[in-house]
Image 1 (cartoon, one colour):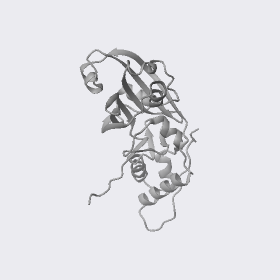
Image 2: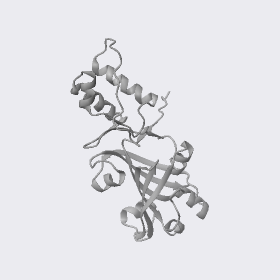
Image 3: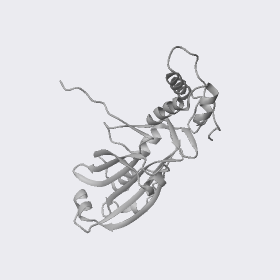
Image 4: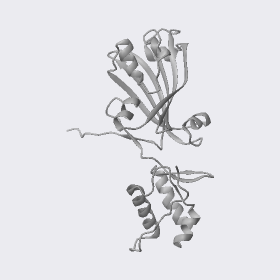
Length: 250
């Protein structure tokens, strides 16, 4: 539960500008766990008055930490400490359920929509299907520790994976169902990532303000040379950190 106004200290004068001292103290409080995810820090004016510094100085420090994803400012509610980001490697295939289990995080998938529809020209080209072939469309909301982190829209061929229409995906990876029920193992994923802003519906589902930044991740999933899924995901920009290792070519 969020605490009501966790006090913010100010380190002794060591010659650094007030802004730098306040920023260093806030970073220290976040790193040490004195300020924990969900805590709310006092209003800017209260911090400024208690330490005899300007509100502008306080605001500068808070804005910088918010840009780094360490704090979250909510109009009319206050400034909250955010959970640490979920680090996602760009160098290997990613499965939400597997990753959360490996990290020991509580996760849940909420199926918002699931139905069979005829493949449009775009979908058919993505999955190497005839136009009009039946496909299963699913909209999945992913939650970690009770908070939504991503919204996935997945399309798969119904004839290849009929069990996906009724499978319990709340705690089970879609790819595990493909393997267990149909003997199909994923061998490759191709992804493209770009920054976007969320519209009102997307923001409401992800519990952020409309216009908040997010990553749009588009994936083609393959089993050998067979395309078995086309997926588009909206990932909260304040909860995910994408990381890649970049070896230098000789």
